[in-house]
Amino acid sequence: MRPFDEIPFGESDYSDVALLVASVREWPADDFARDLDARVARRFVPEAGPVARGQTSRPSRLPRWAAGPAVALVAGVVAVVVVFSGGGGAAVNNAASGPSLVDHSQHNTKAAAATHGTSTRKLLPSTAGYGALSTSSSTSNSGAAGVSGAASFSAAVAPGAKQIRSAQLDLSTQNVHVNQVAQEIFSVVGDVHGTVLSSHITTATQSSGGGYASFSLSIPTGSLQNAMTELSRLHYVGVVSSDNSSQNVSHQYNSDQRQLSDAEALRTSLLKQLAAATTEQEIDSIKAQLKLAEQQINSWQSTLGSLQHRISYSNLSVQVNQNGLPFVPVRKKHPASGFTIGHAGHDALRVLVVSAGVALITLAVLIPVGLVAALLMWLWVWLRQRRREHALDVAS
Amino acid sequence: MRLGAATRPSETENESWERFEALYRSSRDDVYAYVLTLLGDRAAAEDVTAVAFERAYRRRRTFDRHRGDERGWLFGIARNAALDELRRRRRTATLVVDPEDVSEDALAADGDEDEDEVVRRAAVREALAALAPRERELIALKFHAGLTNAELASVLGVSESNAGTLLHRAVQKLRRAVNAPV
Image (cartoon, rainbow over all chains, first blue to last red; front, side, top):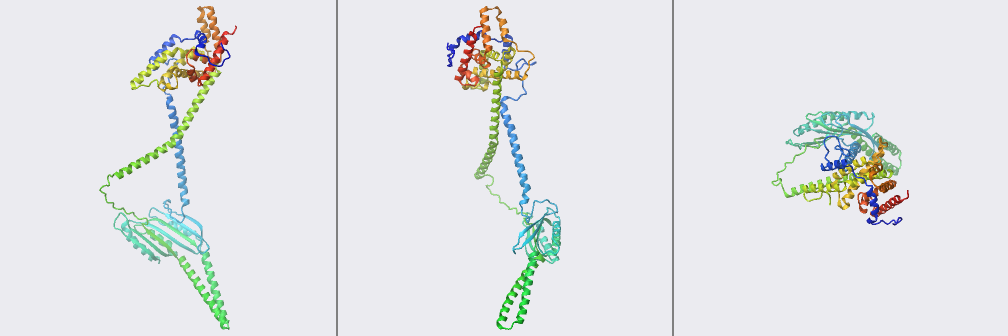
């Protein structure tokens, strides 16, 4: 006997202990042994009636093998809900922020079909070096509503201010009415004493599309609003959108006028000096200065006249079927369009690509979810085993 | 190889059942003795033994021979079931009736035997009771279940050498307790 030897003995060295332990071994009771034999013979199928002692009867409980997939499924559903709710929120945010990125002078074709347009004011750098206040008003209509947005536009302008106005009106009509609408536009322009700067009319007899007209009009500013109202009320016409914009040029106008006045004052002064001149050399010098002053006066008058004309007459661009009722090209049927190897190969490749994409996305979701589920399962098993071992440690 | 491994489905089921039944017949009493050693309560040991065999039957297809012997696998299941029972007892905290004392029953059963033998058995029972629960479990697994050190290691989740060392210490302690002067 080697009481302090830590090296395990061979099996035969425990024979004395085996005899000792065997002498106190407990055996199962006969009733229990018979009952258990019967249950094993029935392959643990429960008998009808009360549940036998020690018999586990938990049919409603989830099978153990299904716990992992169930956890993974729940985690997957949660992940998908989180992912898609997050994505949806982003989409909403993008949609909400979209209009703010659009230039205010552009048509907002997605604006509500209300008669009120959006109106914004912003400071634009002037080509003449002056700051100019620009105002723009857009109205988008899906029906034949009028251009009441323009009415509110004029109310925002200070009385007496010099401003250059321009407008654009998009109309739509049926293909067969394009020519008639164009004639009515000419008529309206004449009524308001405007002029047609340029026009382009394309008529088409096919109902499939192609009818189109565009006009570049110069309308007296005072009649611009009236003209737009009349144009929007033409027969067979619906207003797609209208756009008003104006640029406040009061500062530029006043400046140009001041320059002209100064030039005229200089000429007056030079004329007086010329009348008082005595020597030939002095007269020649003053005449030269007068010539320059005259040129400056002509230049400023021209500039001021041009500006005044732009103020007095507004540019109005009218488009009928701007985006056009699209031509539907007549496609000749190819004799081999039904089936070709190339088409079949393309379709097959497309199916493969889409399938691979779906599989990739599925894996991208399932792999992390599966890893988390496996970790949780492992943690659960580890904790359970620790509790079991602890139960043995504390057992007396 | 698994308990249910075979070439055809019908053979798989039949072979699986036959192997389980053979395992049951060879291990029933050993499992009971082992579980009783852990729990010290006949009624609970019977329940846990039944639960262990039912679990083993349900999971027989998960048995992997590469991971150990069938008996080791079965005693692992029995061990978990017994430890679950110990945990359940701790949760229920108070017992309406204390577990029956196995040693007293055994003493009563030994009444008609030789007095020296009775005394010797009483000493052995006392020595076993004096062991720590884990040492008692080792003794039971070794001498009731007849597991090898490798199977012991598999059931307890320790290395084989560690299992041998632990067993040796438990045996030595038991020997000293049995041979100690009264």
